[in-house]
Length: 112
Image (tube, rainbow, N blue to C red; front, top):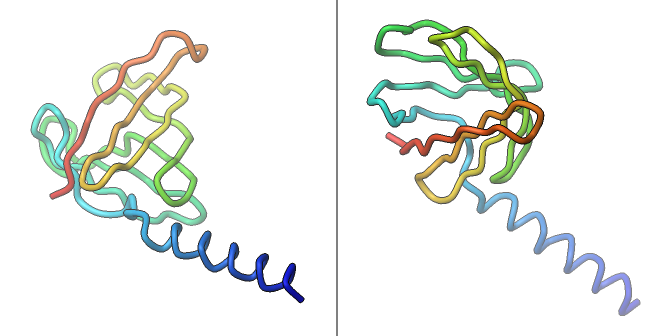
């Protein structure tokens, strides 16, 4: 009985941690000042630029939960797609794109 209670308690704590995590969905300000919208698109989260030279362009598709996401990101200027990841910490999103997991560039976005 104690074991069942411990497992149940651990499950509640894990569920609380996931619920407490900041969602990736929303409006974000990029490093260069554009606005990006991250929204649910099927089983993924799509990143679409809303302002700037590349407004209307989808620049990423990520999946994940809580504060860690992985998928693909696209450089709108070159139209090249890279392995991507995003990590949320409060109102900050660190977005990273890599080639061969070696050559990486990252940006830090702020929640609007």
